[in-house]
Image 1 (spheres, one colour):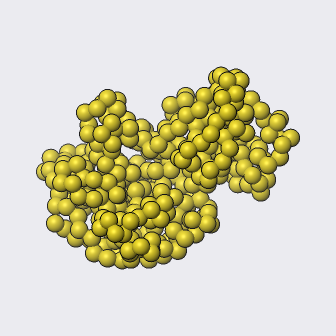
Image 2: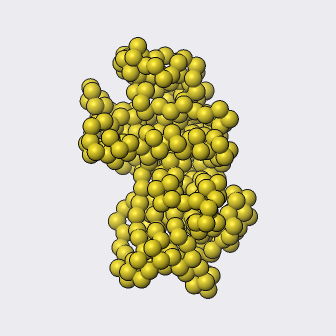
Image 3: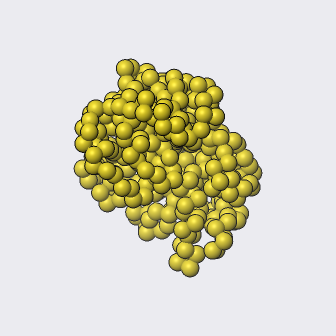
Length: 347
């Protein structure tokens, strides 16, 4: 085994403490990656809240990170020491089911191995995430970081970015498309940038008119204030695609009614149970869908697209020693738009 340093959940307090971590010795198809920057995701907050310290399983969060290859296994041909790479929230899959064969490892029928809190498919150990100075990953699930992308601001592309890219790409968003993005947070601001770069006429849906300046700066063409009944009525049936990134439980009805005939609401932010009035789907043949993460081909294509269009996340960069502060602020939505940890303070 090899050792590194990282931030691990400290018992039932849901706080993280700096500690020594063990990583596996490299298998023939593994990379060792020096983790430089790791994004802080709402999933990390939920994982810490739900962590059962009595179960005896370690928890090291972090599933959107960039870094540099420091060592390769003998069968690795696509990477070399010194290459900048990015790793997302999936680090393995069965590789054999219909979903994996279709390049949608995120939907692996045997369930993908997650970057943290997952079960290694070969030795059964619990995966430990990117809040650490080193990560060992199967080469198929690391991605070359394209030149020109700032590695800190690119880290959130590996979770938030690919999560919104999946529906935009699958739904064929492009010139002539009318897209609305509900919620202007970590996912939403990237959805706006990507939709605009794809050529869509793009609007933001927000509870507050205060987001108008940010929406324009991100390239949006308009703002719909969801708390204004008149404005919501004017926007009815007005969008081919609505990307809903709101993380809190909410009524989907008002957002479905913004969808044009044969259009789609893609619900990404809140992954819990929802109640839908069938009439909101029936009138206009509207569709309700969702998406999560991305497969290997889609993730690679997303990174190339972002490099071509200069798209990265707007971040607040913090030393990793401030990880608990970042998690606390994120739980209160006190960030614009994504925290990223600088892991260089781990040595």
